[in-house]
Length: 148
Image 1 (cartoon, rainbow, N blue to C red):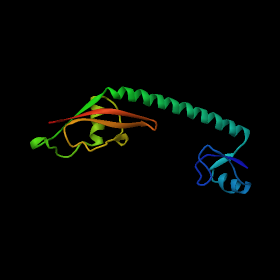
Image 2: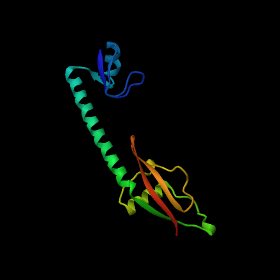
Image 3: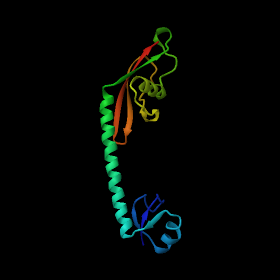
Image 4: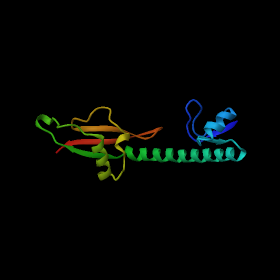
């Protein structure tokens, strides 16, 4: 029996896949637990339309991420950090502080979890912070750290 999976099923397939399984397994497990539906002509057509719509959405998200990455390339934020003798800092600048600075200074909502710091920011200077905007797109934001 051909079945279209509605959810990921371990050792069988991913959501949206068309799989061929035994009738008993389909009736007693997959269909009963609503993990899949029988692959009728209508359901196959619905799946095709759904996949086309998802591809269109993913393409739009990718274009939007590329546009935002280009916009971020020219932008920078300034963070003031408390320093002691000889320019030594107290603590380091976190991604949370960078996200807050981007929101206040640029008006961008950037999640701190998407930011990647190569090295801890523990001194004054200029740093490039990578931001994962999309699985295929990574943008960069310039962060200027100065003393208070």
